[in-house]
Length: 178
Image (cartoon, rainbow, N blue to C red; front, top):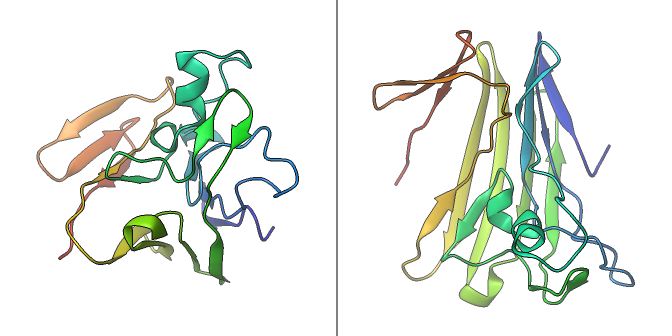
């Protein structure tokens, strides 16, 4: 699908949210989740969507719709879009330059254009799994936070500074660029 493309490598699979934040005429149930990913291994969820919690005005509902509740990047502590009340969305960015191949997925969003930043996420399939690359391009100095939400069923063990072992089978590594 053009909105939820996926890659598979043996028993490992990944999907990236490349859907607009709701149709303009009805932004009721939207979440700030552009370029978020889901990951599974052997049909077991590894990286998950954190869910909805409820449809009442509450802190849980506010969190569930936020960018930090998704497997993506938050810049300067701000959501990708203006979320208010239980079902409303104001300012929101657009997705563009979607490029999906047999061994890669790539998309850009401009949700942070107000602070002059573009977020590009590229996922590449390798012989050992997947590489998720994020490029933040723009002006000025900014703080970014990367969020990954693991299934409660997942066993995670820290492996030095390089990453984590997941369910005694998968290595989850982090590296940083320039």
